[in-house]
Image (tube, rainbow, N blue to C red; front, side):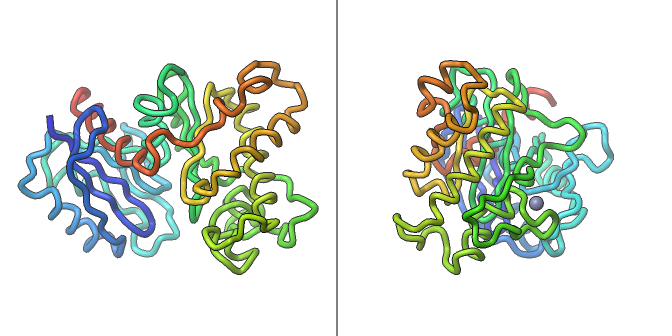
Length: 293
Ligand code: ZN
């Protein structure tokens, strides 16, 4: 079986060929520009490769109601030119194969749940902490959608008293999670990118504080059996140890499960699939689309 996957992000659209076990045999990153030219390059990548189905994990917001006439359309994005772009329909018409679609973070959650850090558990939350922040959730074996789809990256947090920029940087909500803890917020607050922030910089303690608040809210809201933290900011691996003790401290014994009280380092974890979770999730979405056609 040959499956196609697309991970559509703000700076690049990664196209890949692989199988239903998430194994990738070929990939190409295409720079994200206006939709027509970007998607023309995507269709060019898949031309002649005879995939049986395609799975898309995309930035959003997306219309993910299968009964909606705009199913698979990007809705109100601030990304120039992409507003109301019918991504799924355009690719389905061009390639004439079943096409599955979900948010990029739900695709990553799906891959980690089935092939990575969540094997053996039934519910998992995946966060991508990068230029922006997004979260996807698998609840009792199913990806969570609901009204539209979760927008966990914009949950409201409590500003830390040591934060020199407690107002935050989100264009919609100022001090939401993304406004306080995304790669963009780190850069705006400290005047340098996260990857250039020295190991002993106070910015890392502040980052751990906000990501611990995020994990605590997630545990209290969804009670997932595992939390996976991926994305470029989490390449700073020592964040994990700080997040672990801060989460235990903030919960203060209220959630009395041994996953939290005894083995939190196995509960809040890096992605087992590394930065490939999104592409692997696209392959699984393609497989689902093929089964459900
Ligand atoms: Zn926000």
